[in-house]
Image (cartoon, rainbow, N blue to C red; front, side):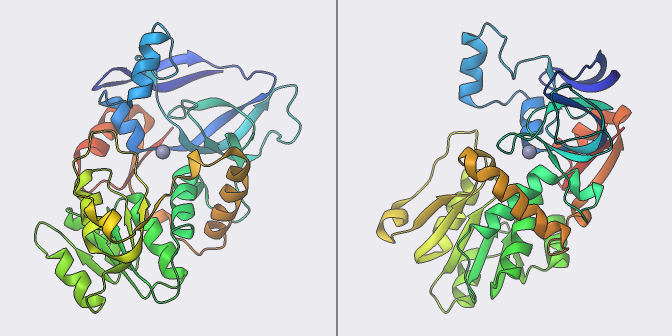
Length: 336
Ligand SMILES: [Zn+2]
């Protein structure tokens, strides 16, 4: 099958190319419904890669999985149009979501079938294809909210009101948070958070976050703070407004070296936890993916309003410019 696919030829040069695809014996060929641009895609398109990938590129003589030219995309949903000869649990016509880097920004993509929550996973009954196209980041963010340790009556601060922060905010509210405070430096994202159910929204460029959190919590500090912005400033705010013995949740994939004042982590006995589903031990992943997305299918978490832009696949270059440069971009989608 011939397909168009988005390629980062070299950092900051995103183009559309053509290639041929054939599913292997344990793989399926999927017709893409919609693919999403994730923070990882943005980083890779701009040449930012984690250290271990850079090392792999050198040691593998540039044959590494992630090296330029790089075919893009890992978040998508679609419909199976062909199955490999060993595939038994999936058939033509099944609706599936991608969990892994399968070059999904394309008309078609090839992926293995569900193994330990990698490959393609079936779309739960009742979940829209729009939400399913965001199945992977949605599962990650719902998981993070569910594993944040929230209890009835808690005050939760979420720093970073991008897609993940907006999803977590909905989850911790449903799980019994008394107040959820969303923090971001982009007012448009705060407006969206307010619309999606945040109790208080704060912009640290203008608002005194520490003062407000102390007022809301009777000078105790927040019960839980979750970092979802991917930088040290966000982790610092979380560290500064958390109560003694509170839970500090780390969600983002931070690629830059961080400078932090973390004496409170020790002095105040913080419970520090990472909240990354994709990097959880393999045996847990499928169970959590199912559990998290089942809640979306039931309508407990609202995903569609978080799609800020939909571009035609042919406009991939513009879509990446928007995702990387427009502060109002929440989820930027590509539709073949
Ligand atoms: Zn992603």
